[in-house]
Length: 252
Image (cartoon, rainbow, N blue to C red; front, side, top):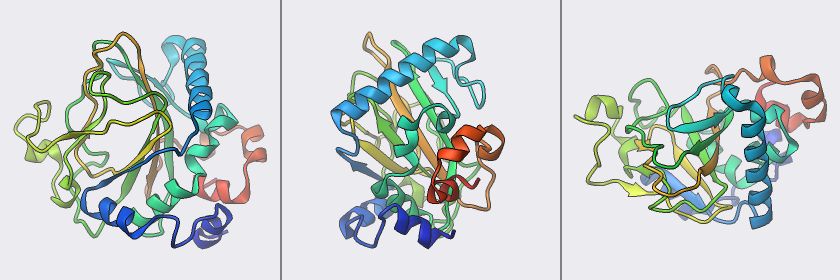
């Protein structure tokens, strides 16, 4: 199996993303894809996330990372077939293929629920430092399991910041502060927002009385370590149900 064969198996071709969509990813660093999940699918995944949070309790997210102000889940590839869409959907894979130039694998598939009254983050990038725009290493996707609104902690980004070659902690005097060019990534449940992970981004405060649920399927170039070592964490049962193309994307 190689990348071309894997993408073909998922139904990805040169027209899976429009030229306008590719241009927005290149220039702005993010792209909203409405309706990737149906309302019923988003609700089913959210309910499974809620059940896992209840089951795992204080251990939730411990396979990778836990966070003050949000409840995390990790290793979701191994926890339900419902989550397979997050590393198998052709539109999402086409976006990853475009940003990472045909050289990518899943790095991690995690959940994040910002809790009422919290969830705010400093601007950050999902890479250790700035990179030249010709050498992007990582790309992420946010799967909106509820509507993202101004009130419930929608992610903020600085459009075009991925082209600066700088990490926000190097470039910003106060990464926690509001940026004059920031926008909020609001949208309806079922939307997936692709964003170049070198784009400056951060969660905002959830000012509602309910958690704001999302998944993150995060991809990296094949030569980089994964955030979640799939070979080490996936069960034999999970490996047995995965297709050859899925196993290639997971690098297992």
